[in-house]
Length: 100
Image 1 (cartoon, rainbow, N blue to C red):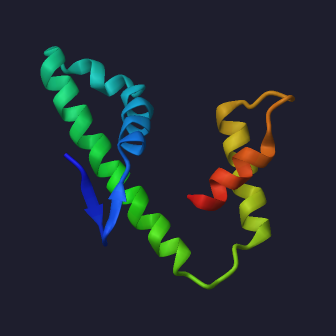
Image 2: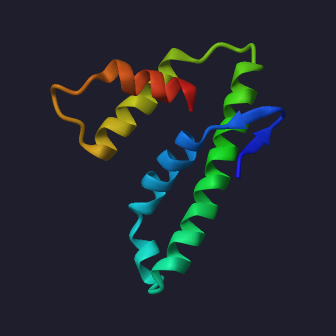
């Protein structure tokens, strides 16, 4: 079922992306019924996708510039947390961090 957030469609692709992202969390394995797990995971993914659209809308409407030092710090934190390799494209990580 398509969702609108302030008149903006929440793309199904975003819901699928969130489904995959949050589905990697081991807590979902504690739900033994596969149908129930999928239903709950889908509902959580839809909620996360809607929240991402809301956050992006708020960010677009916020005229304040992003603090470059804070952005560099967040990119470094994510790099340390996820163990990015030397050949990793930091520009993509930086752009994703700016969007979120």
